[in-house]
Amino acid sequence: MTLRAIKYENNNLEILDQLLLPAHSKYIQVKGVEDGWKVINKMQVRGAPAIAIVGCLSLAVEIRNEKYESKRQMRQEIEGKLNYLVSSRPTAVNMKIAAEEMLELANKLSEDASITVDDMKSKFLLTIEHMLEKDISDNKAIGDNGAKDILSHVSGDSLVRILTHCNTGSLATAGYGTALGVIRTLHAMKRLEHVYCTETRPYNQGARLTAYELVHDKIPATLIVDSMVAALMKHRNISAVVVGADRVAANGDTANKIGTYQIAVLAKYHGVPFYVAAPFTSIDMKIHGGEHIVIEERPDREMTHVGEHRIAAKGIACWNPAFDVTPASLIAGIITERGVYRPDQLREPPTH
Image 1 (tube, helix red, strand yellow):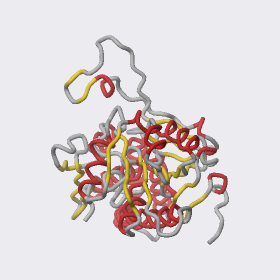
Image 2: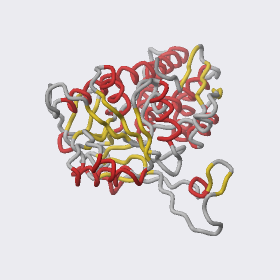
Image 3: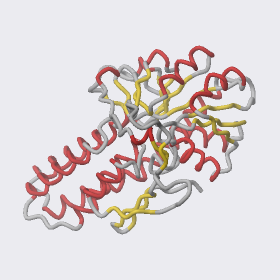
């Protein structure tokens, strides 16, 4: 059974505090939008799909406990709170897209004269709650599509070795995962020989979170530091790299955790296929190319300290972008719940 990073039952929302992993497994209650913004911004919850789900569920918790005098008042409050949630972490597009869809729904319900305030409230809440189950089913489809495509490029019944970066599993989604979902599917098919996960400095999501999930699921895995990727590809015969995405531009350029770009460059040099696994909600058709993606910059302390311990010389300047952009030309395929596409197919995906 995979881990549950998000628990939502009877209007009670709890998230697994990922800042405490792997040492402690502790759930935090999210009582409303303010709590939702904080846990996203502080990275107690992270991963683009999970950010959107927790953000919207925090709104659902708040809405259910509110009394509205009119549909107009409810719509105005929804808009303000959604805009606030989007500001929590600007690079991950899933929250922005979810906010746009939720606001469009609120507008539609508000304008429908046949719908009462209570009807509007219940329909809005039902739509948000459906996000959890849809994310899990989408992730399993991503896993199936990715595993099939990777295996189509290896001979016979050969086992594969996969490299992944950052965390894209149950801790980054409603459950199962995107890139880690592909790895889980390969493991279930008994076609995975080994997975290598990077440490993912400076926040160590690979060492703390991905390694935690791999050990939990008993998947054969090895942790490497970020600077070992070139040596790994030279000496360990890696079959494919599979990473997640926080935002994919219309041309296929992809923003993901810092360090992804250099892995893609190394993969190209060593002839290793480089895949991005992400739901369609991570694709932002309003952004033509990666140069237009806003890159979040994080505090210096994430680089200078590990926990409470300073590891960098006092007084040193830091540059800490949370993400980088991998050009579409380095990406072999973008794995989605609808299929695997070349970057140039995103604007007009082929029909299946």
